[in-house]
Length: 76
Image (cartoon, rainbow, N blue to C red; front, side):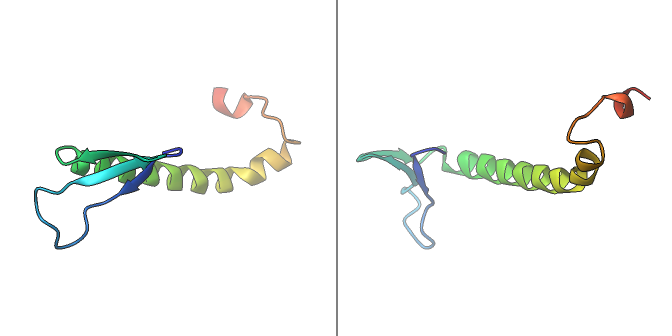
């Protein structure tokens, strides 16, 4: 999230207290949207994990092709 720091709701805290975003002394209360942001961050994390996994699997193909992709394997 760049310079912003996400702080989730502490376990056992009051229900009216939401998560917060903080950056350089600014604080944004996410009382109504914290669950949406948590879901979004979870999905982004899963996408990043899957991307990293696929990148590692594709590494031998890039090396075998001399670091370049002709595009042939996608057209056949």
